Image (cartoon, rainbow, N blue to C red; front, top):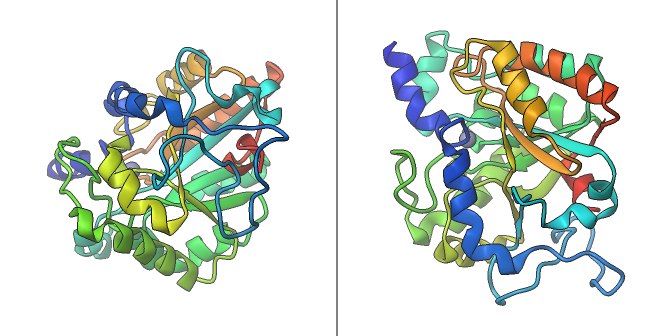
Length: 289
Ligand SMILES: [Zn+2]
């Protein structure tokens, strides 16, 4: 179980335990909730986030769903029963040897299920994952069903403490995110969107300031699937089904060694949510982009 213990530090970055923490972490940015409406400036395709944010200038905007139901649920996609399933493709810089030894940080069966079920979804990919699985990254990034967003290069924390993750120095934050985009684009993936998920959901104003020049929008979540290290797909499915509300953003993983039941859970979640009248959208659609 050494493997799971070590990886625990990594997947804690978007797993179970961090849900409460992530929601706490976003509170100081509540005043920067993205704004929708005809008075919003038009986005510049491909270069800036589709949702402008109000609040202090010079800070990365944060897109989030809040547990109290406030936030951008009044966008077109948020008003109806839309839900965004997101999948974090975690991998750290030092996990190459483990991948070489046969540990699977990818999850092709999950991607195949999403295709078979026709579920539009957003993959938050680390640059290191893209380097390890370039063919998969390219295939995901060139399938109109998916879009790839940035989950840092090596899944280090952007504020400390953060579940024991190593920390990126403030001076290196911008370069880390740009390095991840470069690694993802180098695979040939075309549908790469300017969104960023902080490992662990951990950030502060210094991180938001450091990343502002990259033009990304930070994306949080309101539903933690609990798929990290889960062994019971039904429990994961139940947690998601209990948590989803119109406009929800669900965090799951695309890393089968550490989230082995995600594929099973998705195959239970998707038909049930459709039965309840939900439709699946990418984060870009949830944002109204
Ligand atoms: Zn992560």
